[in-house]
Image 1 (cartoon, rainbow, N blue to C red):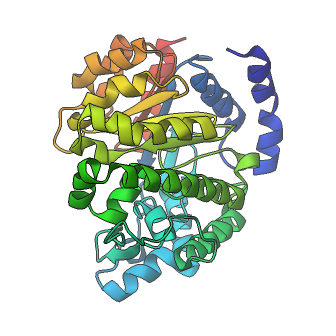
Image 2: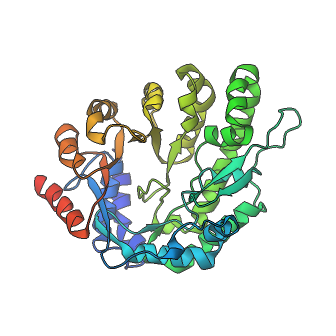
Length: 381
């Protein structure tokens, strides 16, 4: 560990808290210190545990549900007059315990791969589902448009307004996160189409590599612009994974990897992951589903990749059933970010090192969240 860097980071906590405002969360400075210890593979008093619950008597409203009318879905996601009040209600009805802090997303993480829209993709909302999709635009490689960040793109201008409005509305009360920009492989999958991209890996490999290089640069430009709009340099860096960092940090991912062999992943998509780890100081890889495990060795060998978020996937066994895999990740010296059920917590604490471990838990009540955090704290007293 770089002791000078560690001392500097801890020394900036009060300044960052002052810049962000004093109302984010009680004990905010200590929570920041725990996050910094996590990033350094250490603990101060216990591992990071974020426990959240809904507050009784503070229900949502009809305005918090995605409209069924297709014409209203776009407004629900992109009109600040709809988005900002909805985030206010989310803030009011959520109980934050342990290392959980208010984090809000003016550009909803449900708008997956919105970077594809920033690059000209035919983005559309899925009626009533709380998500969106993108129609391919690369019909043929010859003569295709260059993939680059365009600050005049209509989808970007919508996002720019939402991020700016969110920063004004919640500065000092919540940490804002950037949109889900995903990774180069997923963006190219959307812009080209899954079946055609899979064929291109064999038939047009050089075209794929050129497109990936362009998307990587566009990703960097989008990521930089988003963080500037929400004042991340002062308040800290957060994306959809909600892991706070005092210095630039991001989640890297390539869900398209479940479609391909380890060799193809290493050739076409691992370089994008490596590039992001070189551009951003701290990175966590989103490893999603059993089919992605085949690429874990390649990821663990990326020196600058800090950690892994393991997601078993829908219908899979609970987190406590994946202990051997989690131990394998820790043995490689990587951090672990896990979304777990309350029953998983004691099992995982018995099996895993607490250093560099973050557990995110949704509890049935505020009392249950507080007691879970207290139990973990007592364990390390």
